[in-house]
Length: 356
Image (cartoon, rainbow, N blue to C red; front, top):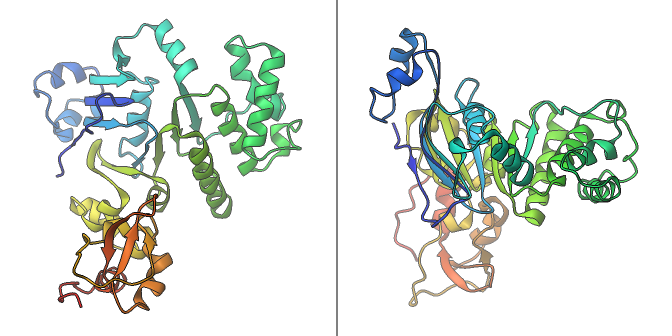
């Protein structure tokens, strides 16, 4: 089993979880006290009438990061999200939000934190059926005490942000599923949260609409740069959206890493099952397979971005006689892409021949 320590070097991450447990049952705290903070044996707890939801989770989330918590039904992914938003109280451990101890907060402090810092989107759209799109989006602002005029103005800005202009006076029943979820997203963003929690937000949508909403999510994040925890059971969705992915099984984080590292280096057999059928070229970026620059090596005139997905540049790279320089966002050369590496990704061959 992989280590569950996934702590960044950020001096103050936005979210910090240290040895977080959520165990359901009357004897949970009593039994947990005897385990000395390590991963617990779920079967032992089950025999005592307890269910382990989250099992010793430790990780940080940095500002502007998209962390996708992925797992199958019953893996603990939604329970972990609920602990971090304190919709459910953790049984043990420490959760810090912007350096503040979440578990030590009073109800009043918690309400204030949620209103000012957190936005939440769930699978069920939970729109108020008797209110229009505009009124639904303005509602959380009015709860905060924002004037009707200001809340409506802000809500209209959100309508435009999620592309629902012309439908602001529609009622939820007059909208498609994708449009309703856009309203839910707009409502959660209206309060300008620093942290955005999304729990299976697109899973009730049909595949085509789901793809559209994933595109919309990525577009919004490129504009807003929120710190995001996003829960999904869909590995393809996780690969597409994540900066990092935490894969959970039976309450334990099996691996937390970048999509590329999870695909290239699955830490456990369980993780490997998810990655086996993933076409590497569709998820891996050039940066993950490039080599250091060798000053004595002749290079191609072609230049590719380190952030490019391999599939999008493979044909052009393989057409070149010499290795291809890799550039960063400032167009500075930061590495070299050898054709053998591309072939290895595409066809699974070992790229251990001497470079020409």
